[in-house]
Image (cartoon, rainbow, N blue to C red):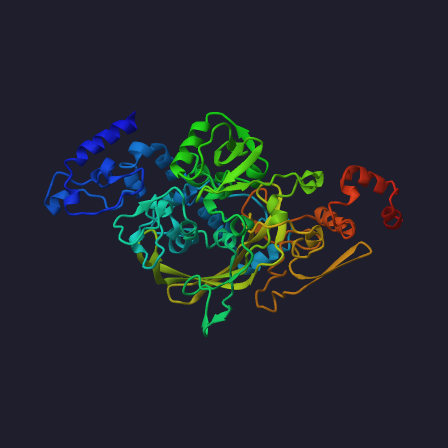
Length: 588
C-alpha cells in the first residue's frame, strides 16, 4: 500500500517538475523505475518547481545510490535491502580487517619468530580468529597501527560505498547500489541503467585480488609477468602491471555459460541483516543446494516469485522452490517441473538440466570429510611470499581520506604457482584446497628512510577457488607431496618410512626460513604456518598416514566400477580378515 501511495505522489509531483525542460531525452533507470512514474526529484531531490538552474539544483543529490543517500531516497521502497547492505561485508569490510589483524598482530622480531616456528606450542601457529570487527567504522585517524594504514592505502578501494570520482581509470568501483547494479548503457543513453542481472564485470572489479575467485572462475591466472607475445607486444594484461595466462575455467562458466549471480543469492550477497565477520559466514549457497536440492513451499515462496518477476527472464515458480541448506534462502531459478529439476540461467532464462549427487563416489562414508572443492577444483592460484615494504615518510593515496597521506606501501611477489593445490582442514572442518593468505615478509623504513625493523608473518587460507571441473583421480592427491602439505618435491615411501626432498629452497632464495615457503606442514604432521580461522589447520601425522595408506589400494582399485566399492565396509572387513588376494600379500 505504501509503495502504491508513493507512486501516486511521485506521478503527481512529476506533472509539476521542471527538470526535463533542461534534461531532455533522458532514459529510464530500468523498466521498474521509469521517469513517467518516478520523475527526477523523488530520487535526486532538488526543487522540481524552480525553472532557474541554481534554485532547481538546491539540495540536489547527484548519486542517490550512495548508501547515505539511499537511506533517504531508496528506503521508501527498499528499506529492508538498504538496512541489510549496510551490515553486509561489502560495506563493513570486516573480513579484510580481521585477517589483517591476524596477520599483523603483535609482529615479533625475525629472530624471535624463527625460534617460535620450531616450537609446536608456538602461539604463532596457533589457530583462533580475532574478536568480531566493527568493520570500516572502526578505522581511526590518524592511523594507530599497520592494520589501519594497510587497509586505508591498499584495501579500502573495494569498499562498496567508495566515491567513484576518485578513480581515474575504468572500471570505477564504489558508488553504493550502482557498484553492483549498474548495467551496461547503450550509445546515446544519458542516464545510467540498473539491473538485477548483475554482469560478471561488476564482480570482477573487486574479486580479482586476494583469493582471486572472480578471475579463476573465468579461467584467468595472474602470472609472474611472463606471458605470450602478440604482434611483438605482451598480451593478456590485467592492468598496467599485472599479466595473466589462460587456464581451464570453472565448468559452470565454460560449459554452462553461467554468471556469478546464477549461483549466488540475493541474501548471500546483500546480507541477511546480521553482522558477519567473514565471507563464509555470509555466503549461504553451496554445491549441494543445487546438486542435492531441498524443495519447500513456505514463507519464502512470495520472495522467490518477486525475485523471478524482477529478473524478467526466469519463469515464475508455480509450486515449491528450492532453498539453501544453510539459511533457507529461496533459489528461485532452480525449480521442480514435473519429475525434472531444472536450473534457469538468470541472464537469459535458458533451462539447464541439473546433475544430482547420485554417483557412487558421493555415497561413500569415507568421503564425508571432503568438501566438494577438494576433488572438483582443477587448480588454485597460490602466491607464495608477499614482500611488503612500508615507508613511513613517503606519501600514498588514502582510500578513506581520499587524498595522499604519509605512509606508503609496496607489494612484491616471490613465487606464483597454480598446480596441485595443498589440502588441509578448512573453516568448515572439511578437507579443502588451501593457499597462502598471506605470507608477509615485512620491512619498515622510518621517517629518515632508514631501515627500522622487519618481521615475517606466514598464513594460509582455505577456500573454494571456483575452478570446478570433473573430479580428480584418487591417486592425484593420495600420494602427492603438494596435496599433503609438504610442498613440491620428490616423495618416497618404503617399508613404512616416508622421505621427502623439496624442490624449493627457501634459504637459497634468501628467505631465511627453517622450512620451505610452499610447505604448510612437515612430513611428521607439524604445522609450520598459521590460519586466521579457528577450525582451520594442516593435516596431522595420523591423517597423513591414512591418506598415504589409501594410495596403496587406490593405485589398483582406481575405478568406481570396482566391486569393492559396492559395499566398501564389507570389502574392508574381508581385507583385514585376510580373505582377499591383496590382503594375503600386503598383510604378511
